[in-house]
Figure (tube, rainbow, N blue to C red):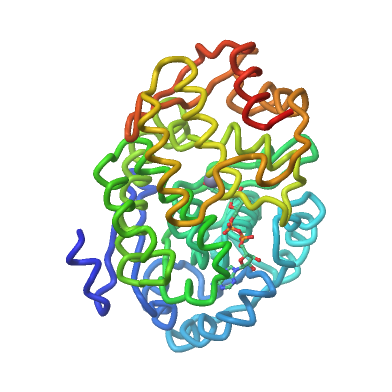
Length: 377
Ligand SMILES: NC(=O)c1ccc[n+]([C@@H]2O[C@H](COP(=O)([O-])OP(=O)(O)OC[C@H]3O[C@@H](n4cnc5c(N)ncnc54)[C@H](O)[C@@H]3O)[C@@H](O)[C@H]2O)c1
Ligand SMILES: [Zn+2]
């Protein structure tokens, strides 16, 4: 895959194999300007509705609408405010009304142009608009290009937690233009990098080694390295989703760091204080800590991961985010987690780098002790 990814002119194509719901992930530089040729064969009507946030719209919407026009595809755009706040019930309601005002029919295709917020929101809207229309993902953040745009999880947030209202609805196509990452703030890039790292930690020690070698260059903006990391990440996710679309088993591994991360995010209010990927990054370290405390994972593996965090500039300690975490409140989030089945907490732990596994054998007291030490309360 390495060499193919390094040829800038040739976009690479991966398949998410899900029978009749199979679709391609196309990754390449400057493919947004050719979006029409990828999209035209897939849409059933002649009209598409683009959902985009205001920041991304200023940067890339015209490029997409021009490309669609070149392919004789009519488009209309609906803009929402940037940020996690747009995954609220209120914004979702407004979006649905705006979509219906465009008089869509069952052949209308929605296009999500933006980060994971836009992808999750638009995908969910597509799954319920007129009882379900098709949608296409054009992710523009590293996080959405390596993770959220692939796999069909869509949803919005509730006051009870993140992504608690949602559906499985697979896109028809994922078009990841690596060139759009050039305008992404460094902090967002690093946040997305946490999800890249996740694939190495789950089951690919060689990829983790590759990231140790190239992670800093990638964060520095090297597009060839980004392309390769995106392809390897998407291939990893596609393989897991192909095996377990609706998370009855192995797909839960993709939640590595997320049970801890979601609790931290909920406590900080899903905002600028802590981005999703930053929460996941710290969450993965907490999962490693828990694994070490339980005697399952060598301390050396955790040290190696933290050394890499330091190299790329990723925060690993909850105390660097805030000093006054409430351990009880964090514990409360675990029991409310979607993955808590019949009162049993489910965690993804590690026997080492590249050796993640799913377990319900976590002692609550040990967990509480580990957490109290880690968050410093
Ligand atoms: N569905 C899934 O499987 C899945 C997986 C992981 C995460 N998620 C969700 O994804 C969301 C986070 O996604 P995200 O990190 O992409 O956040 P985001 O969509 O909020 O984007 C981050 C910020 O970057 C801006 N931006 C986007 N693209 C840009 C570009 N090319 N140049 C400059 N600015 C740009 C946006 O306007 C926004 O302000 C969370 O809601 C999370 O729950 C979903
Ligand atoms: Zn995530």
